[in-house]
Length: 463
Image: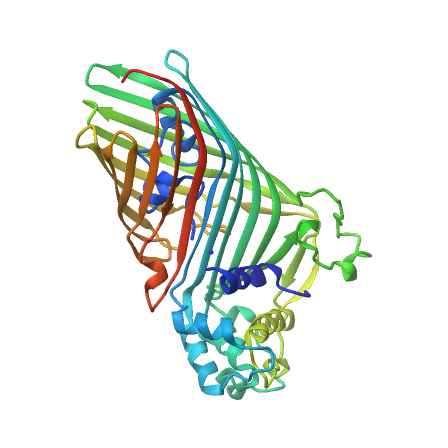
C-alpha cells in the first residue's frame, strides 16, 4: 500500500511542533491534566459524563472554536527530536546513531497523539425538565508502539539482527516477527446530543442521570498491529487526504469515494454515553460514566491486509539514512510484510472508556477532584494504559480561575497541568496545558495546548 499516510502524519506533526489524548476540546479538563468527571457541567460534560449536563449553573451556555492538541512519547528524547529536525536530505546518519534510535524506539508507547476541535457547542438547563447539550467536533487520535524487530528494521534495514539471523529463502510472518507492534489512528467528525436531569432531590443528597448520542462520520482509519498471534491491517481515507487508490479501482469489492466535498466521510457510526452523578451536602460530588459505546461501519476506500509471509531479505535500506528514510522504511516494511486487497465493509468498535470520579468542594474558591479512566476495549484511539489524575480549581479572584493537579497513565509520564481562565458573568476565555514541564524535559518530552476564546453564558441559576 503506497504511503502509510497516518504514520507519516504522526511523524510530520512531531517534525514541526510536537502534537495525547482525552478531551483537548475543554480547557478546564486539560488544565487539570484530564480530570473532569465531577467538575464538568453543561456542554463541557459531553463525552465525559452526561449526567452533569443538568448541573450547569447557567440557563444558556455556548462556545465556538474551542480545542487543543497534544503529544506524548516514551521513546523520543530531545536529542532524537533535534537529530530528526536538523538532518538534511543528503546527510548520512551513522550506523551507531541508527542503532541508538532502534533501541530507543523499542517501546509500547513510541507516540500517542490527539487533537480536538469543537466547532461549536451549546447547552440549555431547565431545572424542571433537565439539561440539553449539542456540539460538533473533529477528533484525531493515534498510537504507535514498536517491538524490537520492527524498530531495528525501521532504522537498520538489512543491518538489523533479524535479517542476519533469518534464512533468506524462508518466509516469516508478521504475527511472529512483529508481535507487540501497533500503529493505530483515526479521524472522525462527531455530532453530539446529550440529555441529563435530576433523578433524586433531597435536602442533602441529589442524584443525576444522563445519556448521550453521537452520529459519527469517519474520515480516516488506519491499523497495523500484531498482538498475541493476531494480525490486523486495514486503512481507509477520505479524498481530502489525497491517497492514491489507482491500482484498486478495477476491483469489484473496492467502493471508491472521490467526492470533492471538504469532508467526505468513508465510514459512519453511532455512539452512546451513559452516566450517573451524585451530590452530598453540596460538598462531595461523585460520578461514573461509560463513553463511546458503539461501532463504526467503514465502506469506502477500504483496504485490508493479509499476513501471507515474506522474506526478511527483501527489506532494503538507503545508505544515506535521514528522517525521510524512516518513513520510507516503515512503508516498505508494511508493504513487504502484508498483502493488501480491497474490502467492501469493515466494522470497528469505538474507543469505549469507563470513568469514575470523586470531588470535594473545599470552599467557594477551591474544588478538588480525583479521576480514574480505563479503556474497555482495544479499539483504535483508545487509552493504552489506565489513567488516574488529581485536579484542583482555585478562584484567587472573582475574575480568574486557575486549574492544576497531577496525572499519569494513558501511555504518559507523571504530568503537572496548568490552566488559566479569565471569567466574567457572561464571557470566559483561557488557555491550558496537560503538562507544563513537558517541553523542558530531556527524556520523553511532549507538548499540549488547549484554548477557548469564545465562551458565553447567560442566566445564572441558584444553587
